[in-house]
Image 1 (cartoon, rainbow, N blue to C red):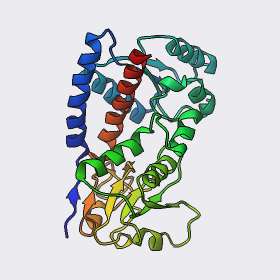
Image 2: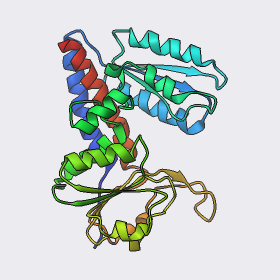
Image 3: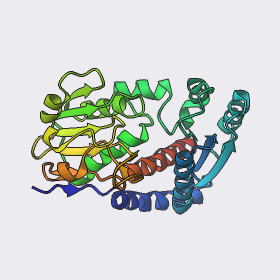
Image 4: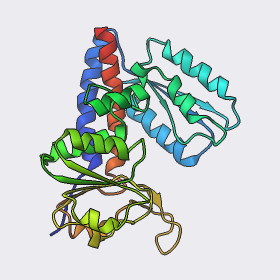
Length: 288
């Protein structure tokens, strides 16, 4: 068996074409979807992510702003900018690029974003709404993973799903979404005993642990659907510097039925769903 590739670039482009059309329709009614991105510090990866998000906005016909600050900027300066953006009617989504410098209170920064502009879905109001299964802004990475299942016609009802990783950004919301879709969900983490045994039960396996190639081919149930959220840069060996996921892609592809690559899988879909949430926020503002 050779797994079918779940192509995040292709699916993202298909969805973004629809977003562009909706953005044009909103613009005709006087509302252009607007996203503000805040970047603190000089982390190279974060700068690339922010540039990709701003470019994606331009391609979809969205308005965007980037606010970049030195790593030693005062917390109050950033909080004041967020307050300004909260009150700005042309901004429908506010994103703070993570991670923030260590001296920053990340919770205070994220909590300062108005719930109706929290297009990352990280505020307590949106997290609680997700748990209750109510309409909300869904965190973009898990949201993108769910779109893979939808597009490929993969039913989740009654399936055994295993999520490796329990972060607030990916693992926990991913588990909630799978549960709402009818799957029986197990969440594994650094304290889990016999991780391999849990993974081998999974019809749906989501790896979001942040360790390169941690999930090997012999940990995957034949025919499983594998979603690799990890993005790691190899530090040694002949492939030093190359990107890889949390899954040993070459080995897993010979066992799974569907698999996401790294790069080109979940990453593009994360940005796509950020656009989806921003568009939804703009539509809500028009209706309001």
